[in-house]
Image (cartoon, rainbow, N blue to C red; front, side, top):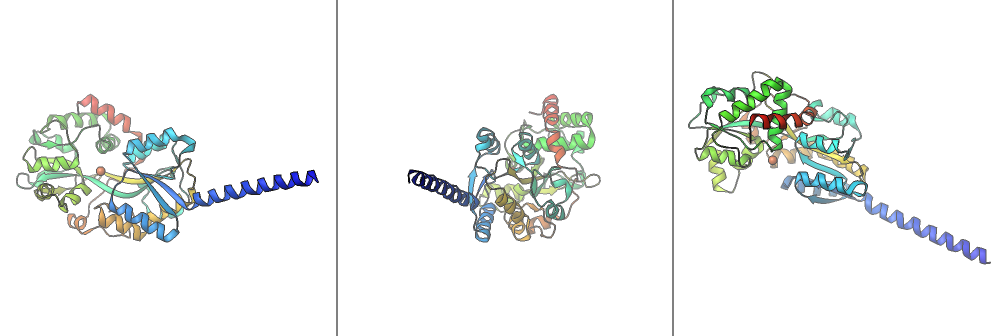
Length: 346
Ligand SMILES: [Fe+2]
């Protein structure tokens, strides 16, 4: 009899444990923790659409990009992160190098939608949207037929006219990496030196500040990402709106490799508690409906070629993109930073 009671007890405990772990599994399977540094309405809308379609609850953990990566490092195997969404291929590469990501599944679907240069070679990150790093110029002072390429910005005629942000910014580091990849180290270093020589002021501020500086007459030509110009042209802030109205948009390097392209992208966390749902989210964000939301609300270029650009981007016209594999932006990041330092680009 004692033995039977003992067995019953063991059985009850075991069944209890099993039920506990099952219920916690079910909770895990019904939620997805998204570590993201994007803070746009478009993303909020997309997560709501995903919740409705799948019944999987999306928990958004928002922070600065480098802080999110640091958080994942510190959390290690215990990290609740399922996916990491961030901007710039250089930064996604950094997350991969730190061993924070795992390959995405159903790569055939990804290959059928995305052009190969927008996907990590090991499928540890993929692009969600594209942005071009373009030139904007003072419409009343610059004849755009005088502009041509990033490389030609070092010509003596542009002395004292260029505006750009600091070399500590990842967008500029990736642009520099693309110049190293396309032109070689020597030319890239000379280019950076020439840019510094032609600068209108010491690098400061963000992309929008460069546009405002043109409007204020501090310089005539700036390097910025396309979506900032789109946002400023539709801003509720009068200063931003008026500044954006004063600049023209120019896509450099159309006669050779094309304009430098970067992305915002997504990867599945190495220790994701719910990799199935993470894969589901990735495929959801690439479908036409989701890509339309990205295209219409944030002035970014969709990565799904079946989706049209927003009206503003259409008005700027089609352009040739540099098809350099974006893995190179990450691989050459350290080199880019060193060359910037050597060239004195602050
Ligand atoms: Fe940005």
